[in-house]
Structure formats: C-alpha cells, structure tokens
Image 1 (cartoon, rainbow, N blue to C red):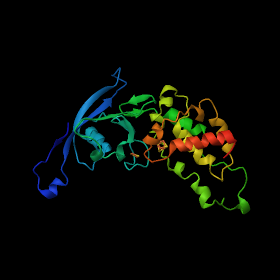
Image 2 (cartoon, rainbow, N blue to C red; image 1 turned 180 degrees about the horizontal axis):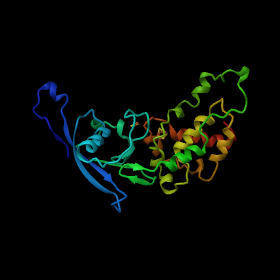
Image 3 (tube, helix red, strand yellow; image 1 turned 90 degrees about the vertical axis):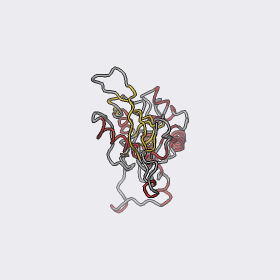
Length: 253
Ligand code: SF4
Ligand code: FES
C-alpha cells in the first residue's frame, strides 16, 4: 500500500513528496523455482518516477538478483515491455502518477513467450517471425540514372505509421491468438511486413503477401484490438493488418 513519506513538508518540498509504493513482482529463477511466485517490495517513489525506476531501486538496493531487460530508458529500444497491472506497457514509459498506488502495482513478464527468468522472456520466436516476413527493402531494378529512388510525400505517408515500430513485442504478447498458437506470425511481424509491402520503392510485396497468406498468417487475426491498445508507439496495428488482408485479396498493394 502507498504511504506518504513527507506529509508535513513545506510547500516547495511538497512538490516533490515521495510515497512508499508496494510492487508485486512475479519472480522466477529456473535453477531453484518450479513455478513463478509473487514477491512484494516497498519502494520509495516520486510521482514523476517510472516503473523502470522502481525496478532499478529494487535491484540496486533490495535484491540484486532481480532480472529484467532495459537499455535506453526512454521508449526507443523496446527492451522493457512487461505486464503492469495486467496490461502490456513499457516500464520506462509508465509513470507512477498514472497508476493507482493505493494498491500494490503488479509487474510480470509478457505472456506467450517462454519465461527465462523473472521479467525476461525468450524473444527468439518473436524475432523469427519478424525475420520471416523479410523486413528489408527489396528492389529488383536499378534506380533511374543510378541515383536515389524518389518517392512522393503521399507515397511516403502510405506506410509512415508502421515505420514507428520499436519491436517491443507488447502487441504480439497481448494477442490471444498468439497465446494459444505460438506459430502465428503475430501483429508485430505483420506491422513490419506492412512497412515494406506499402513502400513504393519495394518490389517484393508479392513475396511477403504470399508468406502472410499462410494458415499462420494474417487470417489468424481475430480483430480483438489488444495489439492496438498495447502498442506504446500508438501504431494502428489492427488497421495495418486489415490493409495487409486487403492486399492479399487484391494480389498486391
Ligand atoms: S507494433 Fe507497437 S507494440 Fe508491436 S512491436 Fe511494434 S512498437 Fe511494439
Ligand atoms: S528501456 Fe528502451 S524502450 Fe524502455
């Protein structure tokens, strides 16, 4: 439970009043635990702190064995996606002031990928699906006059939304189809296929559409919108998947 740490502070100090917040972390050490277990930690937090700061304080001051991934701490690298109070989020983008700290804050690993330790999952299946859709520009002809490949503003706009992906896996690991069928490509792979399928400079849309017409491809999507709600970059994932489905039906972009 949260407790104000500095109730009677002068006005200028009240602006930085801290609270004791209880974090319930789902811990798992494969060397000693048969099952993951919830462990509680009380951490002094400021409203402008992020959940990532809480994990650092636990690791640095309470239990150095806590395992989690993070790199940039600013919503760019995509390495700290986790379930916070049952929702997939980036720990570095989740502010304490936006959580109900009158109750414990629950933090656990994302679902649908093999749990390795504490908040860390094996990302290999996720990146295999990403690689399978050939997420790189493929041009079958040389650019005119040997120069760059020009693109209009409208052509660039066509796939702008899906360029924002940081490969955090928040979408794929929030998808109920992916939870029950680990073979499904998942929303992140389809988002990254969309980014090249609709790029006017690319000539391999047919290859990617063929790959995604597979039984584990776009048709497995049940339009639950979990992915769109989970995406920390605000990408309209369900719309992108619908556009890829349309392209499969049309046989091209
Ligand atoms: S589409 Fe959004 S949620 Fe999915 S991997 Fe990319 S950034 Fe993360
Ligand atoms: S640590 Fe890089 S996105 Fe959160």
